[in-house]
Length: 251
Image (tube, rainbow, N blue to C red; front, side, top):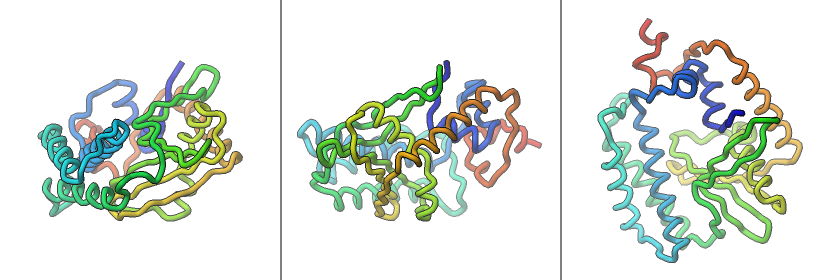
């Protein structure tokens, strides 16, 4: 029996050797990118924001930024790498603050929908003995049996409409949501591109979900049957956590 996730499958598709390091040999990453650090801390801040709202203790913008500052400092280590030329830790730190402030001011008082889950773990059967785990940034309800799946992105680029349409992550999360709540009618997929203050909404048809599910099942079978894990060299190698031990880089 195996458990898959979007992160796990994407890792294999991006580079089988990276998958081997992380999920087969279970090697702790020697380093991580500052982009990953930024994303983690921003996610923690937004999770804290909505958790406090659920507990009827809303944070002010200033309090949220103080939380972000503390989390950034507490988790920043010498293992964090900056790849982009002419950028500094301060540049990334400031960009995260700007994202949080812009989000806070746009959505305050945060009553657009009712949050029912934060970093919520949902499972559904992928194959006879395999499962898929979705870990959703935020799930909310905008009406009876109407759900929203929210995903926060800190990347510099906003995908094109065709790239949004071909995105599998939130589509698989919708499959997981419908497995958990079979009464779900409408499910909106919501991407928040925080660096641009842009919200993108989309929906998937039942046929689209089934197609994505079949592809994911095939990928999971490919992973389980894999006996070799070749390196796939791309520009993303510069950001890889395993760059320092990768034979393709060392050669």
